[in-house]
Length: 355
View 1 (cartoon, rainbow, N blue to C red):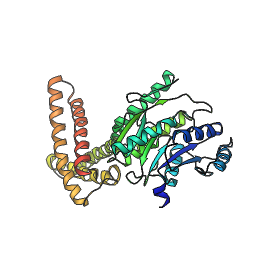
View 2 (spheres, rainbow, N blue to C red):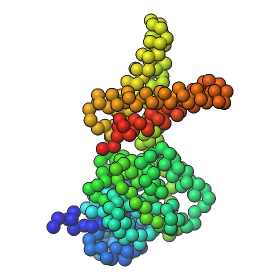
View 3 (tube, rainbow, N blue to C red):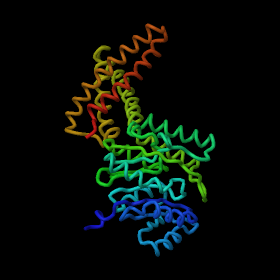
View 4 (cartoon, rainbow, N blue to C red):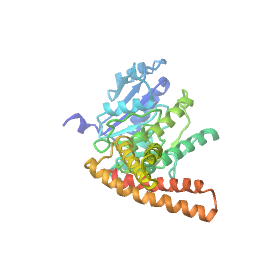
């Protein structure tokens, strides 16, 4: 039997300045996983100045299940997680922090949930029934709530779990792809959910415990990195940027055609060129990982999908203007927003649909 089939579970633990937590974490993991025949514990350390790597190596001398990946020229929590997953051999891979705020005793429950429900991703959630947090200040709660809301609004793939910000999760090898994953900041789960829209996701509750030692890695830079990551992978944001560019293309082409033809033809020409530019940008950028079939079949479908959006803009603008008597330009703006929602929904489901 090969190593891949022998190893049931891999536990990936990214570390930076966690020397004091290494031995207690390994002890609790071994106790929690006592009924699992074959597992490994992979620490991914970013060359911690507090000698975390040395502490891991000491433990590995007496416990061969403990392994170390020492990264000297690469740093970052999310990329450490991805490197650990790539190096793992287990049928299931658990990602958790080293600070014991993620209780190892929850892992068997996650494994059970994965096997009984056929889940591809199991998220240890603070926000499902039975979950919670200990010792958080109002500011910390507000930051967590805001990050979750942002993810759910801008990354629709994250809505399959109550806690897309969780750093404690399990994935099933073979059904989850991390190919091309390039997470920024401190939340790798969001990247995994984004890149695997077909994955079945199940939540398991847990209580986020108090940190026993060391310092939290959550700071201003981590928050900004997270916000940039969300913006970078958000299809609605990309779609809106493309739409804004398309508006400029529409106006520019129409203005140029007005010099040589009438208003009606310039309007039609501007719309058609903007449709083509929007299609190209969305095909190459917004939905580059979801391009089934031939490009010309997607182009035809996109033309068909644009029609309802155009009608939505017209009727909503008319309705808002007539009922509220606002400035027609404001009514048109409301119509454009409604048209954007229709256009994005139809395009994502009918043109660049999931495989």
